[in-house]
Length: 116
Image 1 (cartoon, one colour):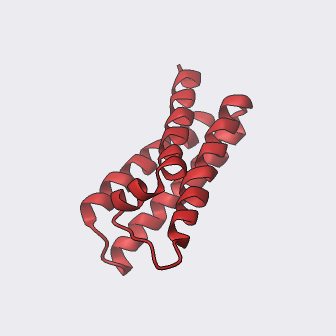
Image 2 (tube, rainbow, N blue to C red):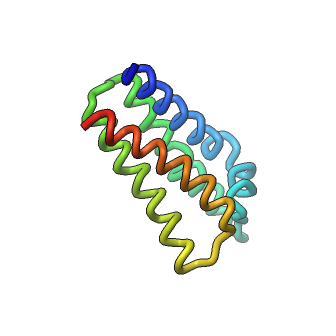
Image 3 (cartoon, rainbow, N blue to C red):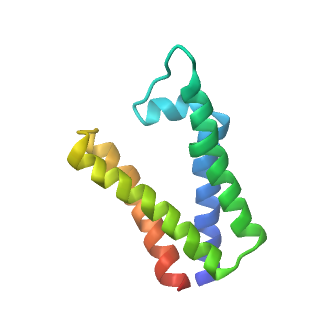
C-alpha cells in the first residue's frame, strides 16, 4: 500500500509540475501572479514550478528509493512552510495559500511519515 501511495504522490508531483512547465500562463493565473515586461515570470514558472517538479517526480518513478521520497517530502514541505510563513508577512490570498499549502503539507507529511 505504501508503494502505491508513493507512486500516486510522484504522479501528482509530475502533474502539478506539468502545469508550470507546459502552461506557465495558466499557472501564473492560478497563483495570482503576472509577468513583467521581460516575461521572466514565464521562464520561472517553467523552471522552478514546472521542470523541477516534473524531474523530481520522474526520478521517484525511475528510482523509487525510500530516502528519495523522504528528500522529496522535505522539499515539498519546505514549499508548504514558505506558503504558511507568507501568511504572516505578505498578506497573500488566504484561501489559495491554505489550499495549495495544505496539499503540499499533506503530500510532504505522507512522504516523510511513510518512508522514514
